[in-house]
Length: 192
Image 1 (cartoon, rainbow, N blue to C red):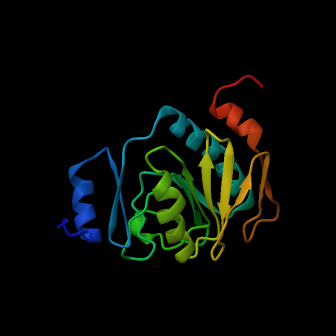
Image 2: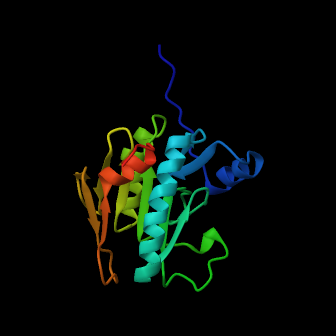
């Protein structure tokens, strides 16, 4: 006779108590009662976040579409979950000066840089969550494959981009165009 499959359903309060006890790592997230725990990111992962953040920050400032942030940031977009996307853009109209993550209720973009320990969470659990709460774009950046998967609400498969990513969010006068080959060369510190 096998053991019963007993899964604990976590609450936001329980996860917040873990967050208070364990600074700075690991990273805890909560989606639909499932606790997601990931180890600290690698230097390459952090470099990818930094390079992409510079690109997005310059674009968002020029287009006045929002403010770019990075994890750790405990976002509760639906009141029952806590997510920490690697990068995310809070809409410009969210608040004049964001002083607490609890004020964030919507995003323009969420970005995850895939790590071996986060593949399932990023591609399945978090992707479904961001689609369900209506984040207009969710990017999964794979530094090893040198690709970006672009997901939008209600899509059943991503647009996978290898060479050039073009993105024009609502309210932007011009599109952001990212040369992905160049971006990944910077991440890997390869000569141009």
